[in-house]
Image (cartoon, rainbow, N blue to C red; front, side, top):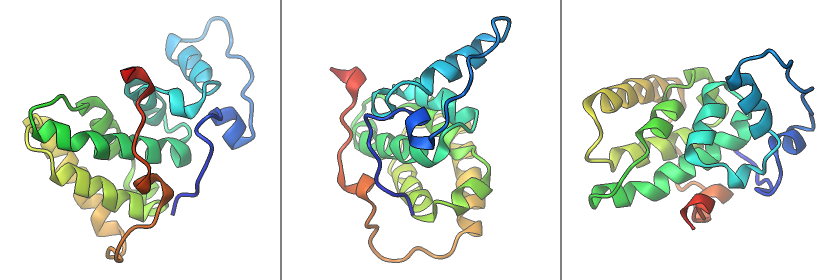
Length: 160
């Protein structure tokens, strides 16, 4: 189960751990990840969340935000709107063991994916395969979810 946290805090503050500055000759990916860890998690755009999640950075805080975004934007996709396949792919391709820590979140993600109607075949196949592995590893779903992140709508800072 995820615990409430302050979206105005950075991963550095939430984790209580400041990474040293990366070496000057390091890759741009390493530099970006270090910089993103210093920004408030609630201000991260989907592409920035995906970049951090792909690197398995800050998962206890970023996965709930990402799933909330995916869940809240799914109804718009069904109505012909845009859907962030990159964020979805990033989230569903985490190691199934990661989801053992967040079973309710995994069930919420599965329900969001089930509402999507216009995913590319490759993303749909990847999501179904990954979610199938995750669901087999989790206990059966229990009743209504009570997580704080499920009740709060997403305020997308990049959307104006």
